[in-house]
Image (cartoon, rainbow over all chains, first blue to last red; front, side, top):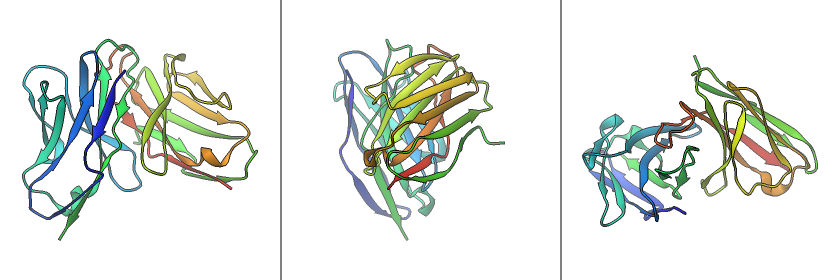
Length: 115
Length: 115
């Protein structure tokens, strides 16, 4: 079984500051890793995903994430945030061996960007 | 064009009633999902269909019954609604039947309130 822990429920940050949203996972099998974003009153949208290869993954809107297998982490970063980045961010995993597409989500992190 | 659409967007009903939520995707995807997002924004998968075949059925009360008339539609019927069913329900779809690495595209959600 897999589980995902997002270490911060809320992250307040000022506009143009850097931000890191932390994600750790637990799994007995290899996993794919995802970050999704949910803007207010909307559905989720994929930011980026790690499948294999380079551990640094770049996504949309200037976000990137780094997969660290030894620390079972997949932290999301952005060097300079905008007001429009205010949203809920979800880290998720799915097992390599799964053929169902089942995603296990973390609890979410609310990013609040202040002017 | 909306990729994944859900109707209705809001649903307010009394305990004990039966209600349905409809989902349609025009992306040509083979797999569709239903997720439940509770008041703490935690997302959990409920069901998944691949080409009209049920492939994920999590520990959901049997008052919830998904129906897939074709691979572009996945509806959710809920019998004997309870207060605890109040949540936001998201439909999603992804390409391919065997890819746990595929991006899932989410609908805008249906906010169900049971009084």
